[in-house]
Image (cartoon, helix red, strand yellow):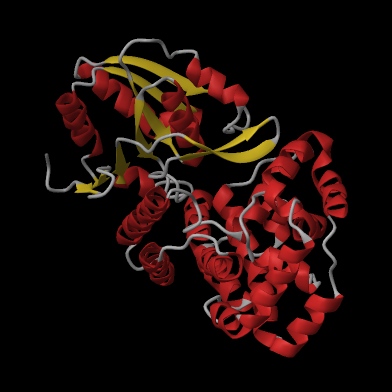
Length: 426
């Protein structure tokens, strides 16, 4: 096997990035004796790379079933799962996902349910989940992560990545900038809520994030090197999630905002928005929460905890129903079971833990850039910095502030903000 391959020692997940993607892919498939291929892409990604892959595989005498997902907006949902699943049968087959995050999530899920494996061929450096084992799916309008399996390998074609649409590239940067708040949330959850935490994985995630920040500032100087570096960082983030066992190393309150908006847009029949674009914009707003943490003394925090919010499960359920509608709300309530069953004694203990660790919490807050700094990073890569940039409104921001904390059961700065009675001002 070519020495240009990089293999994760823990997960044995092969990663290649370069200009010889298709020949290297074919060599890998031959070594694996995988001759029955299900190739999945959408119309744009088939034009960008899928047709070249299909032709090369057929010329090399592979059996290829080609699935081109069709529709105005391809989503990781029931409709497109069925399109991909219909070609699956009981024969030995290997799926190849040619696409960005959505196609990869669909194929990850379908191949796992078909008791098969898949290979990822990213067409844009747009998300950090290529190497992970979680499919980010929207089922019956409810955004959730469904555990599947990681790819056998990732073959990233550098020519295709460099020629990807600029908004998709900006989305990849936005997803990585979100690690500022995600990592702060993760450490916060460990200190306050006792959530599992891995210092070594957190450090790897931080290094990958900072690598992308550096490339954002030099993007115009060497486009190919920067795109390659970003893709490598996205791959590393996926490994961090894979090795930890869930998305905490890469996902926090900024993803809660993003997932809330995704469900709202779907529910209201509005155009979808790239995941990383939503995450980047959300990170600006989450930075506001951490700014507030930095500005408040321990005494003021203690006073606010005593006087500003009284936990009531019934009121919380009513709020979930308002924010999500009854159909999705039932799933949200199940997700929030541990939170909603919290006793008065446990809530009191949680408040005490916050005050006892206030100095450490403020140190964590110092690791998050200011709102202005987050905005500046996104502007460098032409990322969204205002709601209208991606078709959102101030009402969408306010609704996320009000309801996004319930999307996942993860403890984040949004929980702390609720307890302190804080809401950022638009």
